[in-house]
Image (tube, rainbow, N blue to C red; front, side, top):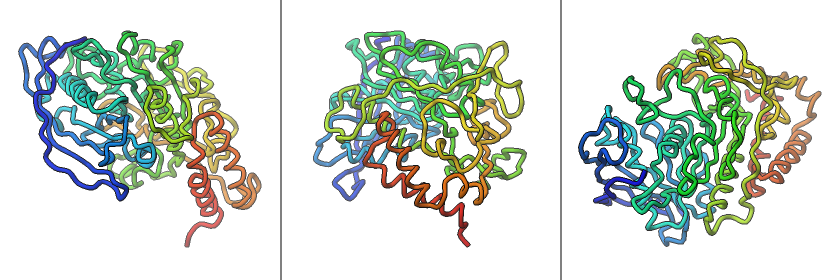
Length: 440
């Protein structure tokens, strides 16, 4: 839809040095208006909005592209995962509030105003950057999907606002904040408990203005977020789908006392959590998307986007506290190997050379009943004993050599960058050494 008044005012509240290498952070407020002509459910007249934003980039302005981060619960969503590579690529970073209770002027009964804010912020940035990518992880990835699916990537001039869309941990899910959630229930910045995810082909229905979409699902997303629905149709030419064998949330992301105590996951019974992360592959695919949409000045080893890669799927298990089924919808889950690791997908070195079994796949309760129902994002883990590891991989230097070979295979496929190899191998070698000889 092409509608809406443009941003009417941008106020810079402050600026500060962001890094030692000549970057700065600028922040302030943007104000505008949304109305019924914008396709916002719940608005019968024009509605004024104000929202806070930040932009981080080189002081000298020598950058062409900007990553616009769709906030998750009012905070940064993708920044920590990709920040070092953004700086080396001289890609600027920006975000603006869109979610009700976090963004002033986004009413609970017309939360589609947040989609207008994301559109108008992009239009404002369009005059400053040559390439724009809208990105999000988890809940904010579902916002990216909703933004695209509901047609908000169209400006007043009828042209696309964002060139690319990066939906990490998406699983094809969407938010009940506007027309797709106009089902009689109250709007909510989260997926409906029985909302049916959709494949990229159902998100990209406007060939003239759709962004190039990269959607990524994790292993646990097939158990909690019904991600097999996102793999149920051919991927459009201007899209890629990647399955990552890491959990939605690696065990290192959140302290165990928060997972098993505050959240009460697994009935409050603490177990080891799946530690596998996907950082190098996330960064490589994001840089590949930036290259796809024509961003200038990327690192020499920034890969081209690889073809789509899927898990090998089999029929889903019965509904349980560890599998979030959908009424009357056939779902599938990844087939696993002898080490309980998913078969297919992007072959991260930590899955090719596992230090344990990924069981149970998702912690209980594994549901989407509310925005706080997140235990299924974490996976269980059964570590191999030091004796088992030595029998498999030998001493730390032998494991590091094999890990380096597996990492190089990712580089060849376009799912990692050679410039990150030494850091990745060193981290894996340290983790292996600590398992063989635990500290203390």
